[in-house]
Amino acid sequence: MRNRLKVLRAERDWTQAQLATALDVSRQTINAIEKGKFDPSLPLAFKAARLFELAIEEIFQDEA
Image (cartoon, rainbow, N blue to C red; front, side, top):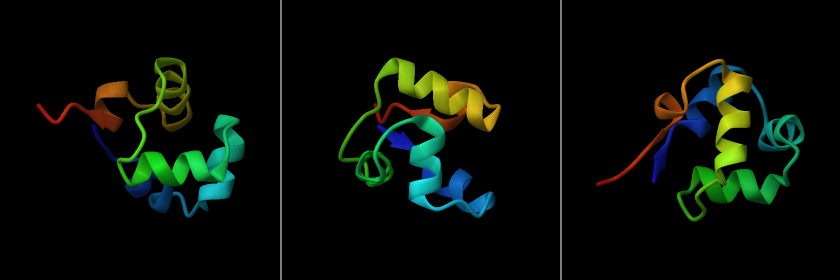
């Protein structure tokens, strides 16, 4: 799954640690999601969408 998490985070000048705190996950989780090594759970995807005030589909895209 592709995602725009790193771009959205950079636009706000947030570190991975700051985003992790906002989403209540570890920095390692943010790093893994940004690198495409881990797909977020649905609740985490919704939380990210609310944080960035975007639809889930605007952040996460299926690679199919």
